[in-house]
Length: 67
Image (cartoon, rainbow, N blue to C red):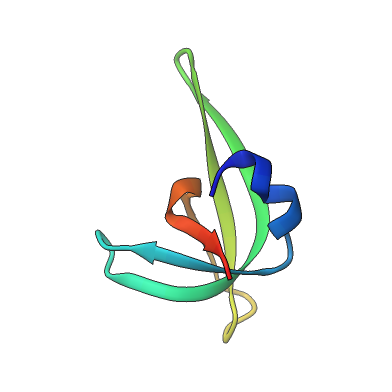
C-alpha cells in the first residue's frame, strides 16, 4: 500500500502478507505512523487483530493491501 491509499483504507480490512514472518491474514487498519531516522522519513501501519480487539501489530506500509 502506498501513502495515498491510506485515508481510504482506514478502519477497513486489509491483508498483511509478510513472508519473513510467515503471516498472511486480515486485520483492520487503525492508524498510519510517520517516523524519521536521520534524514529519511518512513511510514508504518497499525493493524488491529480481528479476533482479539486488544492486539495490534506495527508493520511496514508496503506489506499490506486493501481487501
